[in-house]
Image 1 (cartoon, rainbow, N blue to C red):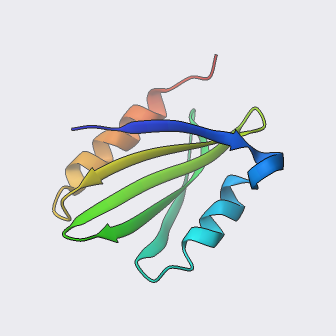
Image 2: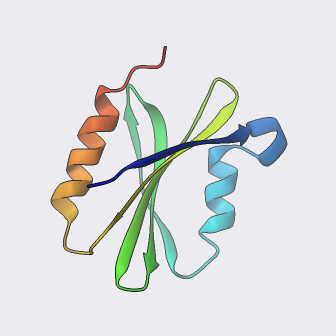
Length: 94
């Protein structure tokens, strides 16, 4: 299982996580699944179909920056999605 984390850029330069998600979900292969709240922060979770795989992403703003966490998986790997969410819930910003 591989989880990728990226700090994209300053929200003032590229827009907030909510604005970026609104742009990306205009693609019919992408959809907003839910908004979650954890120590990681309030995050929008999206799912996009990529061939036979699903890209689940969590988007949040922290410290003026936009952060994304991505997990590429098979559609039947929902147990792993819960594991990634538990991992995010354990994070603390330093």
